[in-house]
Length: 192
Image 1 (cartoon, rainbow, N blue to C red):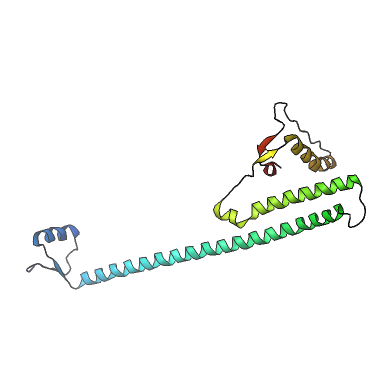
Image 2 (image 1 turned 45 degrees about the horizontal axis):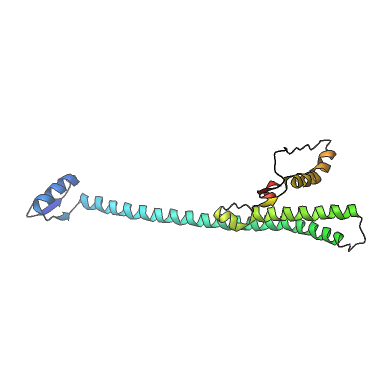
């Protein structure tokens, strides 16, 4: 060692010994020769390479996430279209029946037509809420709280499910306790 200069040839590189020398000399300059230069150069190359690998991994992860988001949006749009189109078609045909475009209908047919229209609207709303991309992006689940009549809701459910149950030789049985109020507040559409 000469006047504050540390020469590293093949001697081991030791941080504690460097710290001791720095505290003693207050200045330290390195003259790196031979094997120490190769070690230092290799360490720098490894640091730069690891940095680039990290950047490349992050870029690949970001691109994969963007592609997944794009594919999800395409799927939602396609499924939404494929479900809404027949629902709207059924609703349109039922409305044409209700307006007697194809001729006069009986009161019973009018009532069934009204039920078809009502159920189509409910189904359309459910599809819209389930497949709305904005809902998926922010994980929103909202309730539309309003006053409804539980007995009417149950009667509507029977109108919808009694015929399919009977067809399968099943009985749909329901009961509302006497303590249940005539009206409740809640999201009737979600209960359906």
